[in-house]
Length: 374
Length: 113
Image (cartoon, rainbow over all chains, first blue to last red):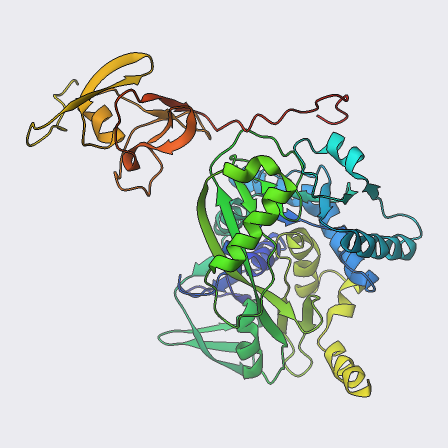
């Protein structure tokens, strides 16, 4: 293996975004990835670029999310120029469909808080059923209202992952699959990463392994508080385009299938599907769009979200291991543009980005103190 | 290069039924799948991909590849390899994706495309 400047551990959306951003900044990068038996959050994604409601009572996260979505067209251009792959990026705005008045009231409260936090610069509309029916033909009478924001969008997440692989390879990134990291040693010139049969050396190290960041962080003496949260997704037969906007429960892909989802379960590391949850997802989708009642399902899967203790991203420049970084987030699609165009240059030392500071690991110490105090 | 169809029945037994394929009447064995019946008749392609229009024909014959999607008695996206033929069955190629026929608006003007 040739000399490398940065080792990125993790070949999902987060790791590949950072690898791509570092390659754009001229760094020589090696990505170490596990095999296909890994948990693979990046391959279970729903594909939303979602802004509305995110960062309630945490405006730095809301700002970071909005910055990423604003940068997404640039990322789309870069990847298309490097790979020719059409990611099917669409940013027409999105709908949060509400199934009861309490849900609508809660969404409204959150969006109003965010609009105040942005001094009024936070576009959204609240729609009653009659208004909604005009905007989303086919919506069912069980939907009591909706929030629309022009900030939201969607993309094909599998094509995004593939484009990042192709683009990284085209820019000289070395990607090694099928490896598990057994140990990380700090040495004079950076880090030595040990797998069963190989050792890799680099001055800089980025841990971007999703749920694997907890054991990997521990190898460098860091506590990285991430936990799994399962989501299940159903996929239907291909349908003529009828849903021209993403919603949080139902999304029509560029190739015609519908994805139905948005379940939340704490099931440990069990990433399988379960009949009761699939039935709930299907029932809710039919309530949203009654015409789906006799549509065929062709696939389903479960995948594990990577949630930090407070739900927000972790961007850590390790204090005790200079040159090591920890990157973890739930929204690998939405934040991909910020990861490529802001976070990677920050890791490369070429960009002073104050927006990243609020996401360091130190905040969890405060969180624990707060918890004990109440 | 034209070749003889390699797909043929080992034994000719039993009844025949009549089905309609793209308006053409076909005599087929009564106890086979729709996909097998159409392959026996060498009908060529049985669908046109919803993604890129590419023609497709029955392939895996066991319900996993979705190449044999057809419109069967008005039901779109039916898997021909999992359906037994029946007398009077009317089938068409699946051309593109199924249309849910959602009426954009019954009585009010449409604001968005």
